[in-house]
Length: 615
Image (cartoon, rainbow, N blue to C red; front, side, top):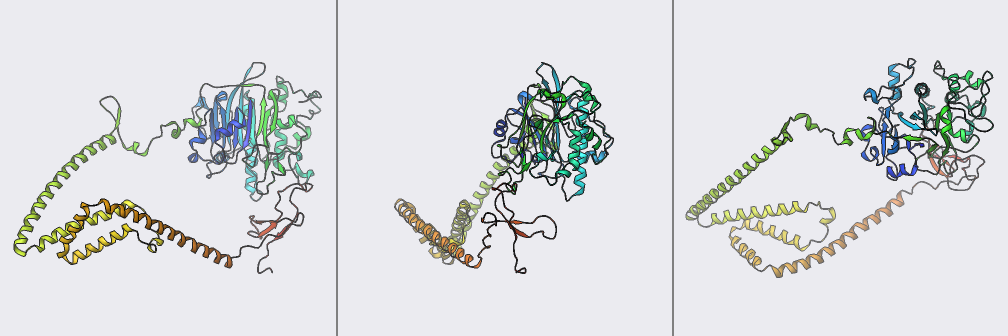
């Protein structure tokens, strides 16, 4: 079995499709942190991946923040899955809940909800078969622990309280007889060897987060206390402890009466530690520069100037199944890299995915209701098929609309005939009384209305808005003809006696249209080419003139000064930390951040950007 953890820094921000990313990681259980997706932002491509089942925990605080997800191959489908550490986020049936929450009396209900509100944990329960053929339960806790912001004191307390809740849940699952693996982004480097540049080695272990790790983890290469039998987790022959020796596990039970600052000085002095082991240090106790996180702002990954804050912790009895734990810095796409553990045991897949699986979400299962469904009654038709009243109403409306349309057409045609007959009668009467001028006026109005409607339709069919340059370009043949027709219509309105002549001209053109259409097409092509050329020249000349003008006015920032160490152009930075220098700009070496002994790293050049008032 292979299990992997990776802070992906946005599950929707991967360069390749998610399935391709998961397949490249080559693990049966993939635990991702900082997915940065909330419940309403989850898309089908991230929720349903072919060959995997997914289980999410979403942030309920703000959008695009925190979040974890566990992807299990079809051959490693879990038995149960649960969101959060407190049990307050579960809405499944009792048989689908993992349970084992431990003693939560040291937390208030509001505090428990607050700790689980940021979507930082999801638990999956599996069945494994060890090398002896024995099947055992395994709980995988995927966590994204909070970061202690130095500028926010309340976040430091929040981080320590989250650690305490995590330990309470892991210990409860362990006491219930299950193997436990805690993996993810813990956001604390444990030892000086796990940090690229520790500030002060003497006070390095005084950090409250590191103190918690000291009492949560057991040093696999340290002997037991003086009162024990002297058994070590790893002896001179590097053999792990006997997993059947339950007395060792019982002797190292967690003292749940730790105060809020997670003090464990007595336990650290006695060398007892906890019931979990850092699997990477179990196999690589002295490996240096083994980091999992780097700063992307300073380009520290190029010089491997980072920290190791991503872990795979396993309970001591499960160590005999581990074969190796490796860091994968070659995998890019985030400011973290994956950590993968390999076990000799195999996963026994469940026949059905748990209720928390993403494929059961309403929007992905295909059963999500629409808003209109709440306002319609469901009726059964003649064939027993369900038919909503809304459909019946719409169909009846369609038939009635069709009937009314036919009736309206008939009535319209009938009224038009009556109107035409009336107009003919009125024209005859008007002719007898006033001569032929009134009849010509009626014919002229009907012709002008018809042409006007045709011109409006032609304009709407074009559907393109003209540009300012079109007013200064040459007119095409068609535009000139349309303008001439409009002028003739205006003239006929003023001089009704010329209507008959215009009608004769139009009729003569319609009798012989073939020759004139060919000439019009050729002339249109020539005129359009000339118009395009004129338009391109009109557009390019102002742009060139404007660019030259603004270059003379705005000369841009001055070139950056060279750094003192490498004589290379510096890079401009801005202070974003609140304080007296907030918003100020400065120059530093453009090379990536690294150790002072590394010649490829940046030098110590620093220079404030001088302003006018400072000169």
